[in-house]
Amino acid sequence: MEDLINSLLKSLESASGRSIGMVLAVIGALIWWGVYLIRKLGRKMRNDVSVSEKPIEIQRPRKRLSLREYHR
Image 1 (cartoon, rainbow, N blue to C red):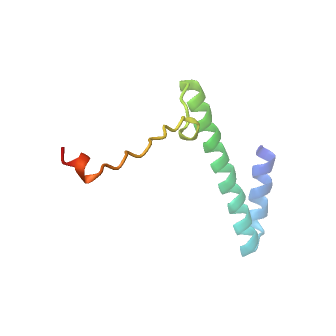
Image 2 (image 1 turned 120 degrees about the horizontal axis):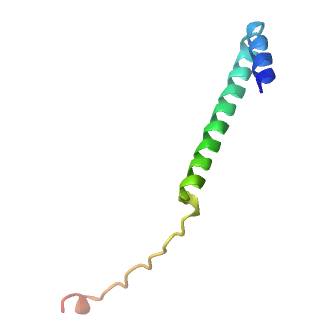
Image 3 (image 1 turned 30 degrees about the vertical axis):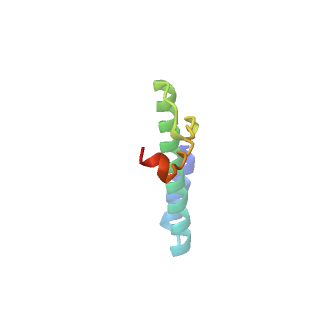
């Protein structure tokens, strides 16, 4: 991991504008991936269920009442 960071920093020192953007994109992706793994691990330790894994309760629409039933 340290070798990867060192090579990224060396390439950043002698880089043009486009390659600086690529290096920053890779660094951003690595940070996003790390945060994702930390949050996932935290949920496992708390035995929490993520939003996408929770069962969704489907509510049936209420039956429309006729005017006669509505005014009872």
